[in-house]
Structure formats: C-alpha cells, structure tokens
Length: 328
Image (cartoon, rainbow, N blue to C red; front, side):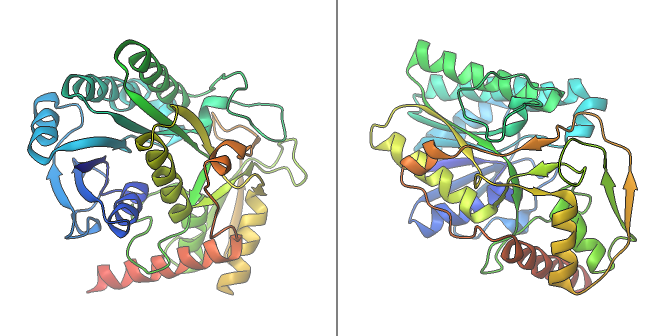
C-alpha cells in the first residue's frame, strides 16, 4: 500500500515526503506545481502533476498506486491574501478539499490526515489554546480550513472515513540534512523573511503591528520546526492505522516568541543588524497564538528541534543553499 501526499512539492509537504520515505513508506505526490517545485520531490517518490480538485485524476492515482491513506497539504496559506481574495481561498482550500474527500470516500480510503491551522481559533483570549475551545476564525483562510474540518467530521460519521486534523501553529526551519526547506521566493513566513533580510536578499524587514496587548507590542506565535511537524503527521497516521480514534491535534511547542524576539534572534544568529521597519497591523492577525499540545504528545510525539536558535540557523543555511541553486 502507498500514501498519497497532496502538495508534496511544497514546503511542509516535501518534508512530509522525506519523513515517509525515511520510514520505508511508498509515496505518491500529487501537486500542480503552482507554488511547489519539481526538484523538491525526491526521486524515490512518484510525482503526479495535477490538481486535487480533478476527481478523475485522483481516482486514477488511488487505483493505480494502491493508495490506502491520504495526507492533504495542498492549499493557499497567506492570511492577508485570503482577506483580499476570499473566493480564491474558498475554492482552493474548501471546494477542492470537498472534491478530494468525496473521491477518497468513493475509493474506500481508510485514513485521511488533514493540514489545518491555528487560524481556526480566531483571536482568542487564552494563554494556551486547547483543541476543544470555541472556534471563531477572523479571516477567510481560517474559515476555509474550518469548513474542511467540518466536512471531514461529517464524512467520518456518514461514511466511516477516519481522520486526523492537525492544526499547525507557525512552521519554520528546514531539514537539518539540507534536503528541503521553505523555497517560495515571496513567502511571508517571518523567520524566512528575516533570514532573507539578514543575507541581503531583502532590503529590510517589515514588522506589522507594534500596539498589540503583548509584552513588547508585537504578535506572539508558537514556532514549530518543520521536521517535528512532519513527524507529528506520521504519528497521527500511525495511530489511525493501528485503530486509534479520529482526532483533532494541535501542532506546536506550547510556548511562543514575539515578532521582535524572533527578529533579534535572527540578528544574533546571523551576526547581521539588518534594517527593521515598523508598520501598521495587517488585517486578520490575532495578537497571540500558542498551542496546548497534550493530545499529540499523548500519542507519543516528542519534539526534537524545540530551539529557536537552531530553527533560525536552519533557515539561514537553507536560504544560502537556495541562493547557490539560483546562481548555478
């Protein structure tokens, strides 16, 4: 049996593919390469170029490769962009997920692991966010993901499709072996953008909002290293395969860092005092998002890279490697 990874040529998806291959799994990647990269898919995996909303193609891939589990990463993920293009986000993140879930049910897929987000929590007033707290997303990105969560839960009740919904907090870093990393040129991930500024690839770093109700006025986020996140998915998939219950699982470390703290760390690790410009808040950004992570830990997951300096060093190393790739 094989595992289908949608969006497996992208940042998180490519790390998931590496994790599965390292575990001895047979992996098929489905990606339309709109933001992913063909070179990010290892040769040991099978790459199918196509769209997750193409139900005929997905059904063909499932049958041809004996797929028993789907890990779904394909999505658009930029919060401010979702505010200006909500219908595009509902199409890509919700409508196409519905098509994928329907195809999975028709094909008899047993296990479905879904890439969700802490944005479903909205702007909560709590130091740690448990999975069972009320959900009130404040941007179309979060709403598009929450609707997909509901569809999976309903498909489970009606058709027996077993699911694990993983709600990411802020993903950062790169594979310590240098095999993959965040490669999108105009990505908005803070650590990547700050690393680019430190390496002179951007003229400055914009900090959006300094008047939040946090100790230094900037947003606080729970940063999880991307390989740790991939292992969380494998932990969830293993649990489903072994008969575990469908579950919703936060993915973070249970502690946060502010935008200015992250910026200072990038300056310290890189040794570069790059320019930082203070800008107004962006629409749709909550002040604080930090995970309560008891559930995923109770499944046996333990982080291996819970160190902000290490994560920053990985990001800097990957940006240098990307620069060399572009120059070659």
